Length: 419
Image 1 (cartoon, rainbow, N blue to C red):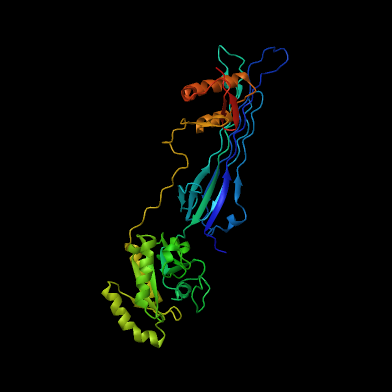
Image 2: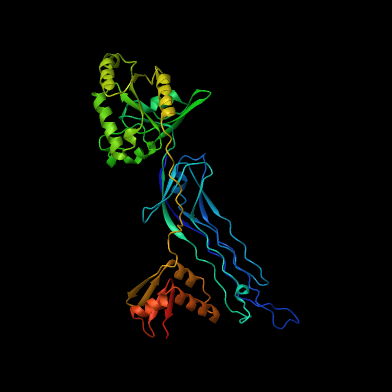
């Protein structure tokens, strides 16, 4: 089954905890701090695999959780770093943050990778906190928390040429005649329920990748019929083959309507070069109508062809015309991968909110620091207090009216305010 949309949950690995430990050895009464560092947690990485062409794998597996880093050990032994979790996606996958709709990346090239959840760094052991004034520090860091998020994946097929037209115009038959693709073909509208891809070799140096898009009807850009669920698959194409049904009541009206739907969905679609053809020319009724239809299309600036997907008549000429248009069409720059973590975000920013139970402090840096603090060690607590002062949180809380005994919530932790 062709699946072109999916929602998944990803979570990176937590960093391993640094260790608070002192060297113990016979005849060495006062061993120094030798707590090792925690290992780095694994990233969740999306990677393009060209052999995939659908998001069907995400129907059954929707949770992707990377391994956490190992904790540090004594004798300055660092914990093992976790490996990255690689999630394979087909070329043409667009990644969005589900909650905000923010674009995170556009994956089009084989082997291209996008880190969607960065693993937490390992906490530092107490070996790093020894100074000349404090040679036995009971200070350490827990590993950085994991990053979790929900993503929405969309697939846009990557093809050179898109075949568009009204239902039953013969698009699937044309694709079958032009390539080795074997789409479902029958004489009723909406036979094609999924986009199909085919590869056509015109000569040793000319190859076209064709996409057969399900038939479009009036209102398709708003979702009518098979609608906008499939229109996006021709956004990446550079040239369109616009196939008209020779047995339609009014092929010219169909032609106008389809072009309107394309332009309403994406103005750039209405500007793409088109190779226009009237299908089913092997039928006498269509042959009789052809001169008038050709005249109408020529008035609009097109040089149409009459083809028969059933017999193959003029199909190769149509493909060559599409190939010539493709050679002249400008190459669109792909959407650059947008990093998940941006340098212009202030990691030290915070907000203070008055809540019924006390005060809540939110902010990336302070919540991360709270999660990485060993609350059972007095030295680590004092270090956290210095951080609150350095970030300006203490001053902001005093200005907001915090008083002795108030509860301050930071992440998952409850702290009592003391003067």
